[in-house]
Image 1 (cartoon, rainbow, N blue to C red):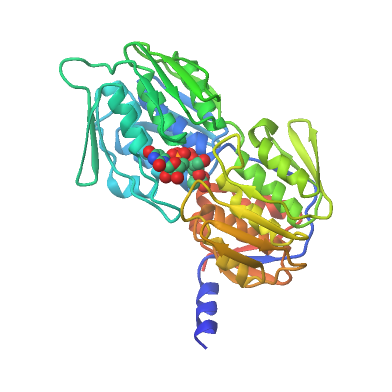
Image 2 (image 1 turned 90 degrees about the horizontal axis):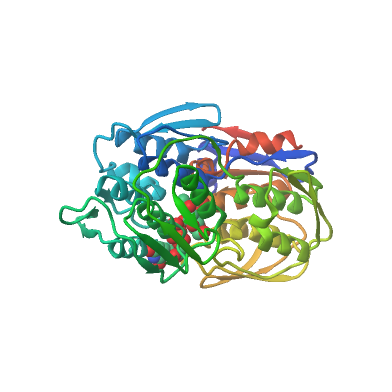
Length: 433
Ligand code: EPZ
């Protein structure tokens, strides 16, 4: 009785109703990268001149970042996939807690605010469902550049001491190749006095995209995309026109897995294969044929076999595709071992996949997945952004109609996902409850 009541409650929430078992075909478009666009937007704090980004995805996280930047006095104008950001009248340096807490990436604004204005006060972002997510490395980097940093009552206050109005170049060695810490330090160091280096830096394509934007604004950065980044500080930066955000490799990977789980041939575009090399290798290993085709990839799945994955910093297998890949492995031939090494609590999709008939045993942050011939439909909830994507994939392959709720997570990182999949033959309806 209680289960039925709970299930009916689920159906009342905003959800996607997915009729499974339909193959996909044709071409699916990949939007600009969420995890690049968010940090590129904060980089506009570094100059008073307009910074124009294009290929910006339509996501709730992007809207959230616009609100945070506007709360600091940034002028933001949007048209289609373009955003123009002008920080010529910043009125303060403390974004509101409730906004920062809902969008971790906004913490990275502490770098450009400190680097340009010499002070910043930013609420600690706090943890989230997938892990504690500390910002120790961000703070350590800012201190190495000469800032005085104080963490009190949940607020991080950073300032340049004395009469100086610039940070000092410094050699920084990160304890872990944190994407956010690398980006925060990069944005602080570009206006520092002297040369800085970041060793054990994050090598993600989004870090490279940030360095490319900053260089087109007059910065002097070399080595981004590798483990050692060098930044020669400059006195000021200028604006930039029409900077295109890179395609979203995580959205592209999700669509490749949607094709594999429905055993469909699909063209996914645009994709930069080097941004997904570890993922493409695992898709080949599990039985898919991948062809580079124009600025995209065509995937033709064979008989999907179980393969093991371990999530790692780039160029390893991305943690953000662990959940979607597990949904695929739940329907593969054989047993796969999936180890999550980046976040301590990113296995919440396991319970929901089990509700759909998946055979998964969890040992800490390792899942042993024994593939089953078919998943069955059920009301399921996505507990975080990528878990929600895994539910959508499982729903595409399951017998019957699956109700996926938790859409507020999904919409943070996937731009009109049901419309894109429906154009390729999926049967998905959104119910706003
Ligand atoms: C970025 O988060 C992405 N978010 C995440 O994507 C992604 O999962 C992550 O990089 C790893 O690839 C954005 O870019 C907005 P990290 P970030 O700092 O920068 C530990 C998604 O689904 N760590 O590289 O916050 C940390 O706890 C999201 O789109 C420290 O220990 O990630 C984590 O275990 C989720 N100390 C690991 O490093 C620090 O000071 C990786 O975190 C900083 C991080």
